Length: 325
Image 1 (tube, rainbow, N blue to C red):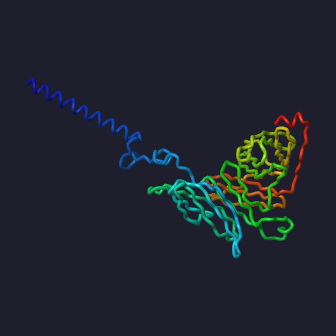
Image 2 (image 1 turned 180 degrees about the horizontal axis):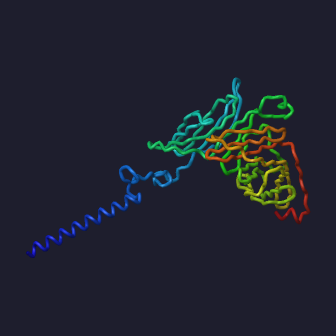
Image 3 (image 1 turned 60 degrees about the vertical axis):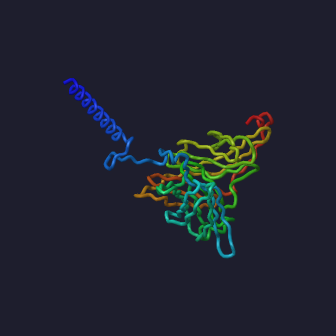
């Protein structure tokens, strides 16, 4: 009788332990910590949450240039991606070229130019799971339009080539005007803006210091020059629709201030259509091009590129002021 009691007790403990274990496993599965087999229990592991994918970055465009041969015009593109990955280039959504990166993650390609507008993106594929990551940047190539006003516009390059990223400043690789507005060490690059009224002013300089931005004669902010000589300033949701005189002013220690001015216009948003796919709308003017593109998921983004001709002014201030950036 005594042994039967001990056996029943041990059996009950064993059953209780098994039931407790089943409950714990069931709870973990419902919480997605242990993937089940089908139904809502399956958890999809994203590259960001997978330890093997930590540090994986989209393919980037490091260098872009355009050149002519005896028979054609070509574009050379190089960039970085994960070592051993495959980079697929798309032009306006169509597959263009596939390149494998080397052991350091470098890749490069030379493309033929057909004279049409180009919008080049990069998809990176890694490993055997066929996970693809779309690049943050897009290369746009927009040729100078044919027409009676082309000669009077004094274009010195056959196309605009620029690198754009959503929410970031655009980089002008080649301007149809030959050069962006420049005076002394200061250059004013593209101006980018979105539907919400956020505007990004950008440029470059060979001097150390700070760059202050004005609308008319009203200063709206300033930004330091980065180590690579580039600068950009974002004005969030503060510019209504309309046209403005925009000035960039370089502030340096013990040196005269230098100013560049352009006439900038913020246009109303593009009309929304079903399935916006990055289609382009370009306004060609003698001293500026305004490129507007719809975004997948809604909204639009615009980039304005200016000619060298425009308002350029060098301001010499008293020594006490010029020494105080």
